[in-house]
Image (cartoon, rainbow, N blue to C red; front, side, top):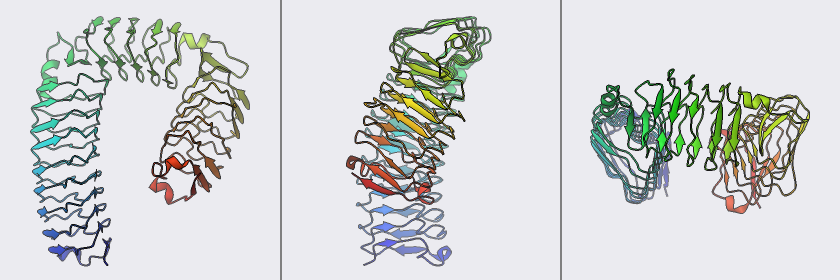
Amino acid sequence: MLIGIESGIIERRSSIKQITVPVGVTKLGDNAFRECTKLESVELPETIETIGDSAFEDCYQLEHIELPKNLKNIEESAFRNCVNLKAIELPENLKKLRFNAFRGCHSLEKVNIPLGITAIEGYTFEECKSLKKIILHEGIEKISIGAFLNCQGLEEVEMKEGIKSIRAEAFSGCENIKSIKIPDSVEEIESKAFYSCKNLEEIKMSEGIRYVETEVFNETKCYIENLSDKNNDIYIGKVLIKCNRGSSDIKVKEGTRVIANGACAGMENLVSAELPESLICIGDEAFAECHELKDINIPSKLEKIRSKAFYACKIESVDIPETVSFIGFRSFENCVSLKEVKMSHTPEKVSAFVFKNTLWLKNLEQDEYHCKYFQNILLEHSGNDSFVKIQDGTKLIVGLVFSESKGLETVEIPKSVEFIGFGAFRSCENLKEVRFAKGSELKKIDEKAFDGCVSLEEITLPLKLQRVESFAFHSCTGFATITFPDSIEYISNDVVSDCINLKTIRLPKHMKGKYFIDEFDLLRMNPEIIYY
């Protein structure tokens, strides 16, 4: 019995106008009908469960297709550039709607989103210029990058509670949207999410917002009208979008939760900023290169100081409250006058170069291994030691701290360490041994932590390890085997990317179905996965 139609099975594609797929077929394979440029109609049986990557891509004459009720998966670019497709009814059983699925379907006027879909993936409806209304139901948690990019005819977007993230350029260029209500469940909005929505004049911001990136509402009617008023800063809901007055002192409105990325950056005359107790996030580069900024308070409920938030300011003293869980990359770098840092707790994550080129860091004493610590955080290493013993009691190893230490061969990590930061040992070409103390409390290894440690032939991961992030062991070409402990909860698919000599990956049984080697890596390496 025929159960699938794969790429290449259809001959003389340019001449096909009509096709009936026989009963029993469960999958249309990747590229199955791609570039059937004269295909006008397709009959699919109810047995179809998957429409593969690019299955109908560039079928320019296809105007209508009835999808079977049992369809569960529409893969990447499945209907991309079907420029005459006007309407499609997605079945209720659909669980997966992948990247670019309807990208470039210029004539698509109507589409429903089934309840089984939990995310609108990247560029799914980009350039669907005839789409006028979209309803995003309560089960959707994320609207991915460029999901509705340049849907110029889109007039109405209804977003239900449950959405947590609106990614970069999600609605950028949707110039006919006039109003938007962002659900209170939305916690982050990425760069240019509503950029150049030229007629957008009414915005209801989420009450639960926690992070807003750059240029989210730039080139909208709302933003441009507010920008023209030089007497007022631009707020949207509880977010300071931009300091617009250019004064020497600012007082951020009480009730403000978030200062958006770059909101006050480069204000050369700014000397003093008063922040409200309601503030929970200071965004990336929020006050970057405010070269005269000297006086600023850190609110007692603040949770995150993001990357380069105070880069190259004139701040002399900072008191970081115990509510702060994250201090971002280079957040106080080049604050050359900074001579006092107070912090009574250990944040969950401290990124690289947070206090680089500050008087305070310069005056911290080194230990015998040329390491500098603040409380229980390893902040800096400046030597070329072949052996380093990290101090007992250390909880965090910040990002890039040993990066490119060519002389380092052996490191001892005490049981107190819970977090190894981004690229902490990146490109330590001669690192041969990582010794974790018995009873290690290590919970997380961040991105690229051991990237390029080509001399490292094995590593015994601690028994309490929970997460290993992207490219953590990238290009560790000495590895033949790696074992993840029973405590592990998450392993990025590309964690051992380019480990070309890896023969075996050992995983606990509960990770079966949760971890897969990245498809690109499978072309170069194919280690055996053993579940114990």
